[in-house]
Amino acid sequence: MPRTSIVKPAARQPPRVGAALAALRQGRGLSLAELSRLAGVSKSMLSQIERHQANPTVAVVWRLATALGVGVGELLGEERRAGPLLATLPAHATPLLTSLDGQCELRILGPIELAGQIEWYALTVQPGGTLASQPHEPGSREHLSMHAGALDVQAGGESARVRRGETARYAVDVAHSIHNPGRTVAQAWLVVLHPG
Image (cartoon, rainbow, N blue to C red; front, top):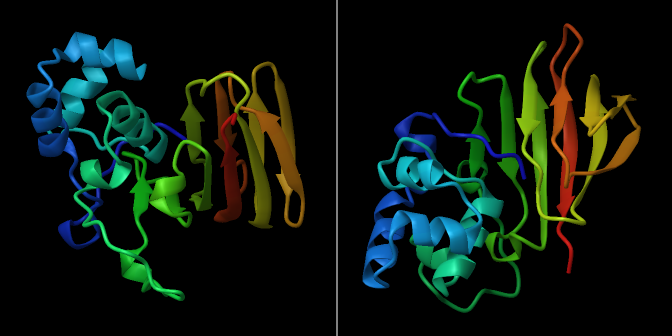
């Protein structure tokens, strides 16, 4: 989903993938430019990730893992193990992405192994906050369902206000943004569908 950098206290910080990314890239003898071409991620973004100056979104992690021929979990430092029939996650174990200005938060609700296929988030946007994103791969769509407040959605040259209880479905293979025009916090469920 949205390409946003992370700034959080250490206890809440998502996995730092920079060291794992650098080791995997160098182990395959790839330059930053070569990995950039393979993954479709800018060379400057790759450099920032490796230097721990930015954390990638789930979609970017998926692209990098695919380009490197590894599982997403390997970039995130997760151990491989068979899952139980039923599992619950405490709130502190649910990854949280926060924009650098602190105005937008995306709590990752979907399992990391589905990144690049389908992703779902709990989105919180402070008054005046904007979550702007570059185009995703062709055919990608988002579904935004409002829980509280209202959000203005813009995709390409079209825009709409989405209010509590309403859902917007829109293309995200164009530049798109979500903005809170109100004076109260807006909350929504955000689902990203990538082409199969």
